[in-house]
Image (cartoon, one colour):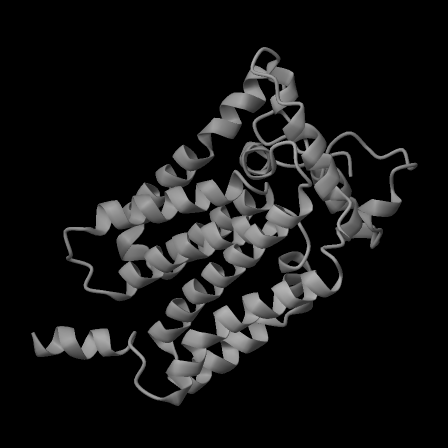
Length: 272
């Protein structure tokens, strides 16, 4: 009993650093809200309007209208649900600020497993002001939702991996963690790659518990399964995305995909 109490204390505010790290995600979201209000909710991210167009033209009678080569199914459905026929930017930005706050709380819990309260606070602040993250949090788009689901899945798997491996709940935890990784991939295709690499890293680091990461992999597959079904039903490849080729091109030749629309790109990664 005492051991359990001591373990739980790690996740409760025990000093000033813990208290500040608990308040910080809320402060961060309020700061983002202040920025949005100051800018009159101006939207900088052009991709968002593509998703709005797709969301408003989803037709249950036309399965092709549900497929986008650039964004998986979940975010377009989410945009349709939160915006309706009204001005879409305000609810989308507010949702992203909520996702960001939940993400930072999840990251705080993840950091606190292995770091002191002061180190956790420092890591949380540095993470939140990372330019790419700060940009996507304050711009309407699918990234904050995908990051949140990925981090929730990672938290479940990491916490279970560091606990007593004989616990009977491991199956549900690993499956649930993988399922969350798959749900993240339903928001952005990138998370599918990130989830696979994350599980592969654990596979290497914990060779005695590989069966558990197979379970997590099944969970990831089940979470992403709706997009696989949609892709196959609309005549596309299982992992066919509009970003794949240009991202590889950017990696090899340092060209932004925003600037390659007029180039005659090869048709496959193998051609590159």
